Image 1 (cartoon, rainbow, N blue to C red):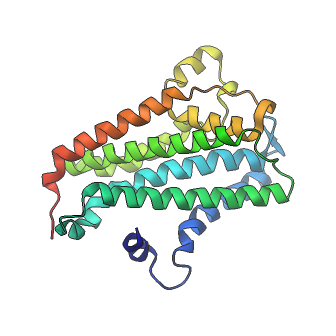
Image 2 (image 1 turned 180 degrees about the vertical axis):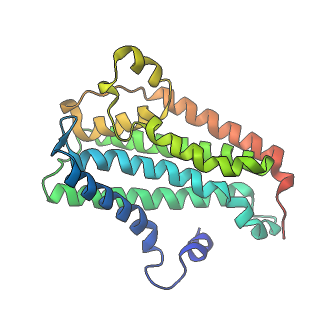
Image 3 (image 1 turned 180 degrees about the horizontal axis):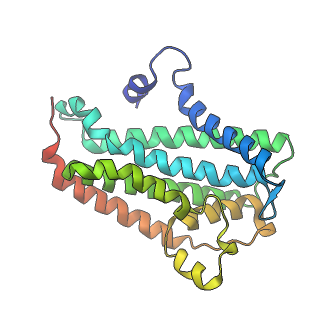
Length: 242
């Protein structure tokens, strides 16, 4: 993890702080923009708090996926050491991105709390559950997509398109309760909205109507991680160790 940190951020300038500063800057920028162009409340929630819960969740998901895509190719040299396994590389990147996004979320939350835009979480346990399960889903998706990219060169180019398609599918910028009940039933077959709804339920409590299952996205996360490990085992010979 220290090697990954120094390679990506270096010793000059903000260094490791940029791990937190990057998602923080993006989130604050989007909050400022939405505050200008949107009404004060979105779905009955202050717009800043609504954007925070959605956009930070989206950043966590996308970072977990994007930084897993070229993890092995970028660090193939360290696999020369027999004690270093591919999973060490994936885990180090996943933990760093999780730590950066989590710290950025805490900073944004404290700022919004100071300006009276949000209250203390109604259920901190539910926030933890949604956040950790979302990270696990992103990690599993990153493993699967990374393995497919090593097997099929064209898939690496499609990965950016896939991550963009996750924006409307994640439920980051709208509530599941706003959908027609018949359509909502099919929409919630996607595991991602469950985690965002959990986070919002934990933050806002009974003030908003949320729809989620804890076990459903957790099962998806376990399945994706297992599938990713199997695929990486199959394609490991395609990694060139320097």
